[in-house]
Length: 198
Length: 198
DNA sequence: ACCTGAACACCGTTCAAGT
DNA sequence: ACCTGAACACCGTTCAAGT
Image 1 (cartoon, rainbow over the protein chains, first blue to last red):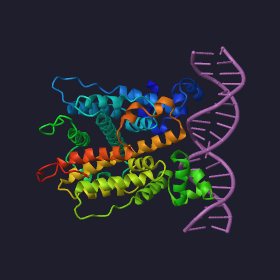
Image 2 (tube, rainbow over the protein chains, first blue to last red; image 1 turned 90 degrees about the horizontal axis):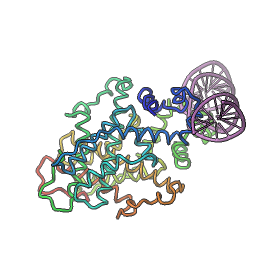
Image 3 (spheres, rainbow over the protein chains, first blue to last red; image 1 turned 135 degrees about the vertical axis):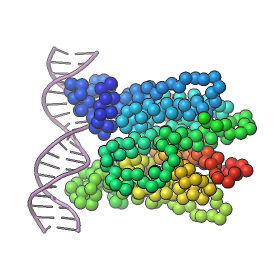
Image 4 (cartoon, rainbow over the protein chains, first blue to last red; image 1 turned 30 degrees about the vertical axis):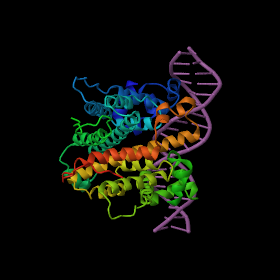
């Protein structure tokens, strides 16, 4: 399993192949099928492993639901960024309905601190998760493209990107906060003002 | 190209293979490489074709930026839903930096009607697009799993899903509106109240 | 300009058989 | 319980050669 993670990091998801993984383990490819029924199942296990490494942010007293949700989202982003193609791998495992849903649960737990109807918590956690996976996958794809120098010349840093006054982390926070601000409108107790996420 | 779309719809993305596509065209696989340099490039072209079919919502007089953005998001969703695995295909083409960005441009155009800083329009359009692709990909994956009866017994309709008081279209609108509500906080002219998206 | 034929270097998965 | 060896049915891509 650790070997699978190392292989992922070194070669990228596209080159994580049953045969290569077997080779790294000094074993025949068919041996893997005693431990996992499928390649997808194996990747789902790797996927869960990546998410397990998401740091659990320390619980502080005065925490708001929005603050905790942002912290959870940031922690999940860090976990995905820790391995090459982490977001793509997790996204596809999740899309296939494989692997646990630790990520979704953590977001739900955070939103659960707010006074929401249950379906708002569900839909909100889902929306945050979708954005999170999409955003980080995009981040990682760009990192890879840039490091390979694949994107040539003028296309490398487009005018719009250069004009962006903040980095990827801030862009991520911005997106999450859009969702949290939107959610703030749905708290049951009429809040005097929309709470700040940070 | 039409053949590629039909093949996609009939067999799903995983089975759209250069060899199968060539077979459907009564041609050798190598013939495809005269027209497209790559499989990815070919898929990016199919991807663009799918997005081109997104209905352009009629422009009405009293339209708000939020109303137009929601209409654009809905139209893009429809276009993705029109073909099997449409969202997954478009997402991966976009992630690879291939194909046009007609989708992103349409969302930017809608948001551009509001009085936002340029980087807000960019980040907002991006966030909506990420959510859109993730959500619809998830929708399509579930449709497929359900139709194949792959998801067994109790797992088929989880309690949470059953408790959801609205369908997929409404869940989609809800997510988009979260983002639009969040964006509303960033309009330059101090708006008296957050505008309704619908 | 457009396509064929043949090859290269791979895949995921199965399954009898070994220890 | 855990793995090997060999096979099956595929892949994407290249490239000389044909028309």
